[in-house]
Length: 140
Ligand code: MC0
Image (tube, rainbow, N blue to C red; front, side):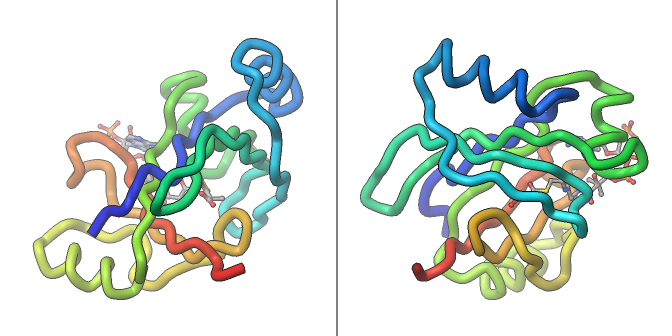
C-alpha cells in the first residue's frame, strides 16, 4: 500500500532560516513554496531524490499561528520531525483499508496538500507516536 516515503515534515520557527540551512548544509533545492491556510502552515518542499515510484522531499513547516497543529507541536516539543508522509496510489482507498483495521483517522476524507497532492493524516496515538500522512501525488 505504501509506495515510498514522499516526505519528512519538519516543524520550525523560521522557514527562511531553515531553508537556508538545508540548502547550504545538504545542497537541497526548494521546488515549491505554499501557504496552506486550512492546515495553518507556510511550507517549502526541498527535493531529495527520485525513485521508480516518484520523488521524495523534506518539507519544512512554519506555523501561521500558535493555535495550529504545527504551532502546538512547537510549543510542546520544539523543532524537529513533525510527521512522515508516505506515497500511496489512491488515498481514499488507503483510508478505507487503514480505517477498517481500527486506526484512528484524523481525516475521513482527503484534503488539499502540497504541490496539488491529495492528503490525509492518521492519528499519531494509533501509529506508535508517529503522525502519519498519506499522499496521493497530483497527476501532473
Ligand atoms: C500531536 N501529537 C503528536 C503530534 N502532534 N505526536 C506525534 N507527532 C505529532 N506531530 C500528540 C501530542 O503530543 C499529544 O499527546 C496528542 O497527540 C494530542 O495532541 P494535542 O497537542 O493535544 O493536539 P490535538 O489533539 O489538538 O491535535 C493532534 C493532531 C493534529 C495530530 C490531531 O495535530 C492534527 O490534526 N494533525 C494533522 C494536520 C497537521 O499536522 N497539519 C500540519 C501539516 P499527549 O501524550 O501529550 O497527550 S500540513 C502538511 O503537512 C501539508 C501541507 C502537506 O504535507 O502537504
